[in-house]
Image (cartoon, rainbow, N blue to C red; front, side, top):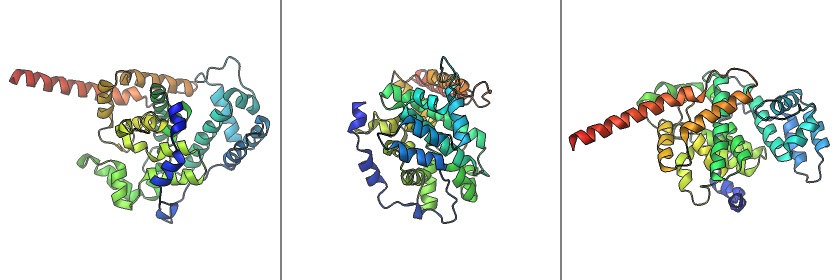
Length: 324
């Protein structure tokens, strides 16, 4: 964690978002807004002397956040011995920091869910987001980075896409329909098409909401993939964990070779057992869903590609041996 303290996230964001504002986005874009209770909670939580009782009162003004917090705490994913029966008890069990990350991700999801996308299947989108969040948390453990920030970053890295794909439907539909004909990443397409990409837009909005700088950094740099491992400053940060998790498949196939990169990473980094991570993510997701069947397990989408990749490589190696 000493590495985390050495990173000046505010300076990094100032440099990378220099000259970028939400004014760069189309004026017709309907940006989501955080629930009032989340905004009030974040503002009050900055006070080091604020009590958990006062923070609990804020959460209780939003029934959705209250139910979500108690449901999360009482799921097998958290594994409490005794059921949490009140918001105050829940905050005491989680602690202020984990509670803040939970409320940010839950509040953001609620804000975005109110914007229906004509292009993305809503449930599939959030399932994929949770998978990336769980995967990012596991990678953060390997990097000895901040696991809570990595989880929140994985959950929120694409949070603006349902809004963008709805309000700019024709442009994103063009990307999807021509996906097989070009290998460019989604952010490259967005940059050419709009002059900005969803990572920059989402980070700008997150910063306006005064989300933690490190979390904003995860959102901003989630598309950098394995390049983050070569960054001397950020290589062991939560942002690197989120960037690696962002290579997992999603509806838009943002990175055409994401899975292949993760397979190759396993060969270069012995501690990174890709297949084991996939099964662990599915297990954690089942625990978090409180008995609701996961219709989109990560293993179903990843393992066939891994097998084909291995078979292709073995066939190529056999050809090389035969021709030598």
